[in-house]
Length: 475
View (cartoon, rainbow, N blue to C red):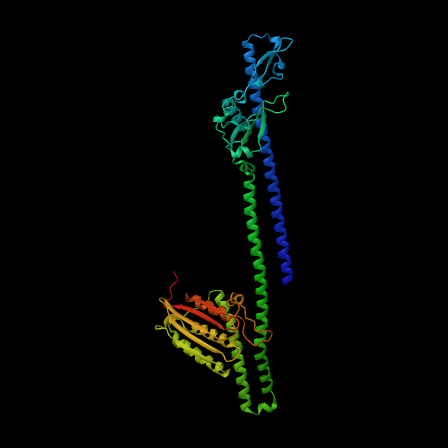
């Protein structure tokens, strides 16, 4: 049989394995989220760069259209027309170099003039949708010259000619967004005229989009494993406790049977003694001893058989009218002799106005006898046992109190389980199999009643029994 150290070792091993699995799952989920975030970031920057390139190409295409309208020969028009000389912004856009080729100074135009609102909005939508990004977003164009947004979400928000009357349109989300690319980058200039910035309020959701199902499944299965693990641990400890109680039961049963068997054996040997055979009085005495001890053993066997029948729900109930006060009086008279020998007393307070219920007299009598017997057994000196009855709307309440050793909260959890006995020390001074209270609870519940206990160590115990007047199932 596993000892407590081995059980705790297994528990710790299982707990370590479970924690390890959870950590590995967390690592892989976090890795997947980071990978998704990197893919998302890459898609965003690709989209923004493509938008910037398309805006740049659109501007150059429009510039070429203007040159064609001015009837420049085709042989003079090539890529060098956009290699802008060092000019001050605001000068004439079109000049010529020494070989007659035109310069088209695009950078001399304001950033607001260079960005087509409809084209920008269309390019952004197309590039993002093309990469499967369908999240809500906000975008803006920042001017490096004015250090402010000139365009935001399809509208001009800053007048570069009249900045003093402009609406700044500051957006906290855009300001913090890491997604930004340069617009109209000129190789002859160190700083681009502006930036295109985009902000996704729910960008974090995209990273978790393909992970949440795996996360939910992992969470559900982890919870199931945890439940099974907890249940298994509880079962292991419960089985260990049951095993210990069964061992205790076998030891108690051996002790209970050993004494009468030894007495019967001694009485039998005495009867066969030649000196006793000629003495009828001694023979009668020894035969009476054998009968009493035999009856005692039969009683113990009957208790075990009764519990087996109760477990299989095969106990027959002979229902009839039972006067609880009369039943308690008979039981208290029986236990009083034992209590008084120890210098104690049994006190009965029949306060219930109606004491007649429907029930099985014999089984209910056994219930009261068991409770009174326990009150006596678990009281060390001068036991004082107090019995009270009272009525409720549906039945009768019975309380049996003693001044015995009492019980801890932990012990109270198990007193109604089979084979469980409250320990009084290493000395076997309290007899029994640990079946009495299990029997009591089963009989009370068979009458659709209830039983509770209140107890404190060193301050005694009080058992409270409720029995209904009529045998009808509780609502």
